[in-house]
Each structure stands twice: as C-alpha cells, then as structure tokens.
Length: 194
Image 1: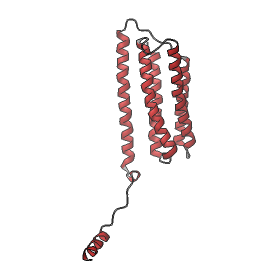
Image 2: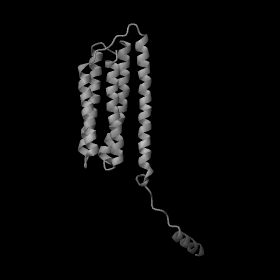
Image 3: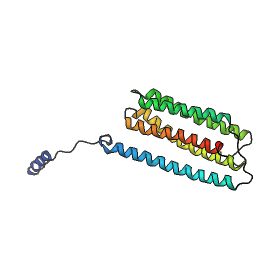
Image 4: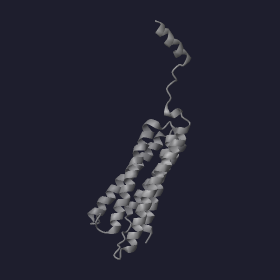
C-alpha cells in the first residue's frame, strides 16, 4: 500500500502531458513549406537533366526530325491551365471543396487527353522508337504525367480529408501550379526551340 501512495503523489506532481498532434507544432508549417520547395527543386533538376540531354542530342543528330505539335496537345494544355485556375480559386475560397473537385477533374481530363494523344500518335506510326524527338516527347510527357498523377492523389486527399487545413491546400496549390508551369516549359522546349 505504501508503494501505491508513493506513486500517487508523484503522478500528481508530474501529470502526463496531453497528446500533441502534428498540427499543433508551429514549425510544421515551415517544415511543410521547406519540404514542398525541396520536392520542386528535385523535380526541376530532373527536368533540367532531360533538357540538357535533349539539347545535346538535337545538336549532334544530323538527321533530327522535329515533330509537328498535335492540336490535341493545345487542348490538353488549355485543360491543365484551366485546372490551375480552379486551384487558385479553391485556395481563395472559404469552402474550397467544389473548386478542388473541379481541379481534380481537370487533372484527370488532362491525363486522359494525353493518353488519347499517345494512342493517336502511335496509331499514325509515331511510336517511342520512331526518332529521337518522338522518344523525348514520350519520355518528358510521361514523366510529367507521373508527377501530375502524384499531384492528383494529393488533391484528392485535400479535397476529401484536409481542405480545412489551409497550409495543405496552399502546398498542393503550389505543386499544382508548378506542374502547369512545367508543362508550358516542356511545350516550349519540344515545339518552340528549333
């Protein structure tokens, strides 16, 4: 019994702290911001490496055959930019869920449009191995699509679970806008630089 009394006073002197959630840490917002910027830097380095390889290959290939920009690519670009606009409205909205769902739908439509485009190109004989430009086109758009798909998972999470957490909405918004800007860069690289 004396042991029970000895434990009870120390428990009263040092009560267990209440459980702390990640959301309570003031530094978690800064950590999230640093994390997203590090991720975007890594993606940028990946695409800069692809850019370097593309420019070198184009420079040394005497038989370089440039592709004509498919019209569906312009439609897909418009869809992605519209989706980015919906994301920005979601970031500013008091109740962002509807706009996040519109952003999500735009991203899914963009990826579906890219798959349709690839099938059209392959059907016309322009496959991955047709020439160097085609190989870079398929590679760059596929890697961008994979990163965009990751953004869609994050968008879905924010739309259905975390839209009340403004910092998550802002982080996903930054990523989504980056994917749109990266897409414009890729279009310029693949079809604007000759």
